[in-house]
Figure 1 (spheres, rainbow, N blue to C red):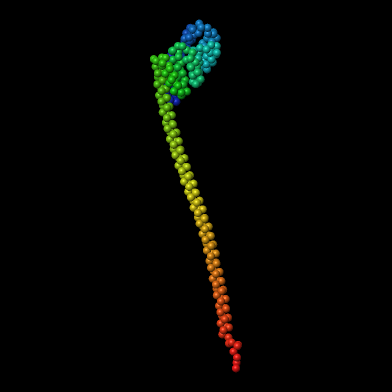
Figure 2: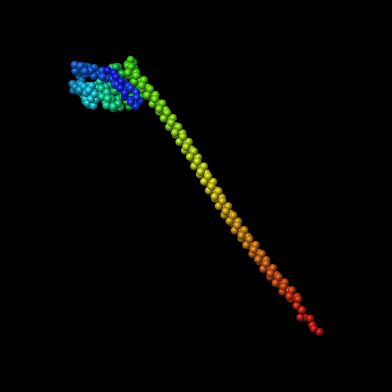
Length: 269
């Protein structure tokens, strides 16, 4: 019984449903294509009973109960179809990641190519459910190597390859966008750094000019003070000269007065 089921709604891609319903065959109390062989090889009656109960729960879509029964049956006796159907029960409860190990166990234990092919098909579905399309592609390819005529697996492989290509293109675009944003951010940082350097250079130049202006003002102040001191010394020299000239004038005046008086040594006869 093969139907299709949407297991990747995000991508709106429809994959075929799980395989394995042919391993649950109701009729005259026989429930697995391997059940008769299991009884003949000494599988416990308890394990067989648990599998029958699990199969009924699975067919009635009571997947939680089916999971519980399959687990108990595997504790009694490990089997290919027990792992296979436990994986299906878990997968139907949207726990694809957990189902993977039971499909892988069924693949490892089985010697039947058809069973292994179906397990690989379901393994691909479980990986696709986890958006692990690269692993899904490999699982579907393995299934087709064992059963090249399986069109459902071929369909799922084609869909997974398309989604994988979309993911890779999207990742590439995201990487290019990140690289571009990083480049723009680096360019922005460089421009900001350059602006900061230019601003720092301008501030240093301004400080240097202010320092030079201050030094110039101080030098001018010193020169002004020196000129003032020089001017004061000239005034003092002129004043001193005036004093000396005045003293000289006074001396000359006294000499003239002395010379202009009659001589007392002349006798009056």
